[in-house]
Image 1 (cartoon, rainbow, N blue to C red):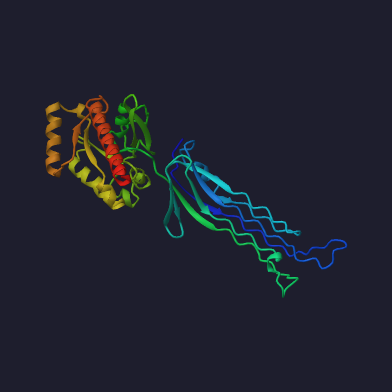
Image 2: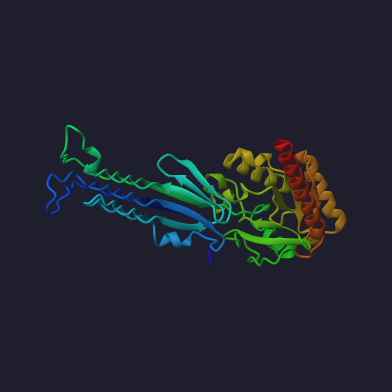
Length: 348
């Protein structure tokens, strides 16, 4: 199923029920006082994350969600029943944005996480609240409050540890096939990946991480060119970026220029992405003699002044991929240990 990773919905909480104007009227009991009850509160609208969903496709068919109205108050001091809440289930990794203010109001990153997005109106007061020594028979009651209404944009961001970046046909899909059980489409034309793919890389029992194959980026992706603008958000949650580039691009372009172009798009989309650890992978080394592949890679590294880790691999021939994945796992393990130590230090 095609990944639908953005949707706009309207949420409308229930109005509160109206308060009641009522008086006690029973046979043989004169001068019965006010006994109008309160209205019930309107139902709330909640979002709840679940691992049983992995797309926002359902919101193409239903965009308006309305909670139940509270029941009006009744005589004999009977309160109206509160409106039923409505719970909207969304995939884990959904970010919620208020369209009117462009404010992020919540991030549902764990299974079962809940977010209140529209609060129901307060029930109105019945006339029993307005009696006093002066006003023995008040005919006053308050109406129920209106429930909140919001226009929301849901944005699904994949929860992956590692993101694969690169120009179309850099070999990202081939690499993810080589290192995981994922089976993205592979072909010799650009933009074969039309939506992100997730794969689990298991380096050994009980040691694994999730890798995301992001559709190919081109210059102008952050401004909407190609497919990149739609999917750049998916790398915002990753802990490590693997930048794939052909060791010698078959179209005659320069690998260093491709790397610079991708980095410009990352910075334009979210400057914080430039602070993420990035490793450089020279792919398709099987197309050249080993000494030529290394010479090309070393030239690009020197031209860029690249100071981070870099590797020469072939996703198709599975050359060097195992070693890179072991390095990635060790890096993620070290990050996890550092985070745990920092948490212990704060608690201590």
